[in-house]
Length: 142
Image: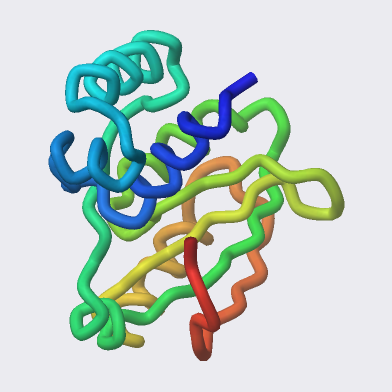
């Protein structure tokens, strides 16, 4: 279980992972060394795996995103997962229950690039069929 201060710390880092330890300490009303120790404990405990880049609004607004449901031949699941991981436009991959086995979040610079990536996914060994939904608008993202 995470305490309230750890939860607040994680929220601040989700908002901006580059926030300095000093600024985090001020926001949490804790000492800098306490925040550093908490960060080290969260990292070593596997709560924080890493820090990532969030795309700027102007850049992200020009990207096209699609959620791609993928039905996989069960014996080829690990091979298909590895192939999907090698497609740079696949930002996330989820294993799901239901009719489809996977959902890939695909981000491309244009509709043409998105179409090519969807074709590439559909042609992967082990992919039986796909169903794509292009994101029209992002209402919010945490």
